[in-house]
Image (cartoon, rainbow, N blue to C red; front, top):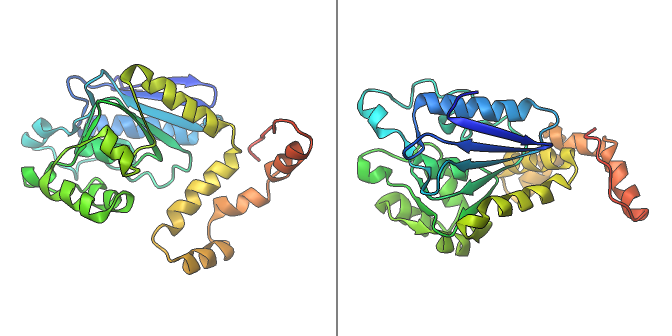
Length: 261
């Protein structure tokens, strides 16, 4: 694994730290390193949830490495299987990812956080998409995901002015799950990850796959899509041993023992 991404495995939990001083900027090489980490997480049968954070206390990620861009590197260069930042287009990843945002999440760094399933933010974190001020566009998922996560007018303001959103405002809009002091960031993310790990692995995968599959559909079309059996991970839930273990454990007043099958 690249020196840019440090991985600590704690049973079913993977903690990933993207550490590329000074600002955790994302070059094509760094993007491929992140991709390798997320693909390894995807392919590990024991892994169930990942926490991604940035090295240091100032930057989660400053986004696309503009110095590399100025020297000729482009976003059409090989970014790895998951697209920019290794996660923004990793459609095959059906396990939850928690972004622990430890500072500035700017441009592609914000897009990386948006590609996660949940966000825990340090109280000094700042979110921004400055691309329009640089003559480019937030095409690492920013202009796609942000208007789906917060009111469109607020998203438009961020996309069209580059203005910063602090952690408390992000919490008010429901963009992040929790805001905590920096000293509590990883503990809070781990607490959330532990709650995830208490759930059945196939249920988590089926939930994420189903949400992704029906996100742009009407309620009626979403029901029809699911009922037609078009989401394989959803179908697997009800054919699993775990779908029997859950109700049985509840009726017996004990914690379930998930087998992931």
